[in-house]
Image 1 (cartoon, rainbow, N blue to C red):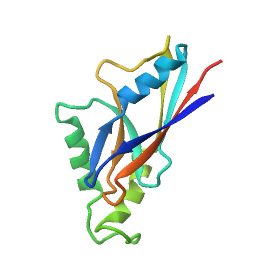
Image 2: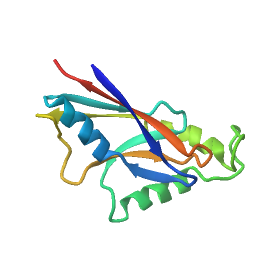
Image 3: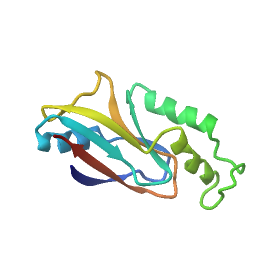
Image 4: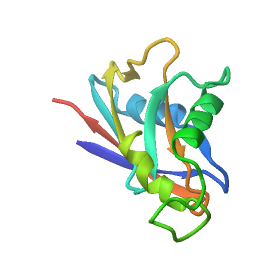
Length: 135
């Protein structure tokens, strides 16, 4: 297994951040068939495979705002208002994804991208571990 950590600046607002280019660069360096495993070692972030742009990322954030409102209902209550929802989000959006790699290229569908989802406005910098598994 080969592994690399990338840093992602998510800023101080909820975000769906496209990490597909960094993932593509990493697997291109491997140059062979295998699996890319993407893992976010944070308790308040997740990874999705979805279409980005065309409003899809905003739709995902809107859906998460409805499912997990940023209000005072959360028992986990340190940090910004509604911070506890960020700790519940990984139960809905896992902190990992695995993508096939063929000939050093991500085998994503036509409209699929790999994105980091972060609702935690208290943590503007994230780490993402990219791991490549092959024979």
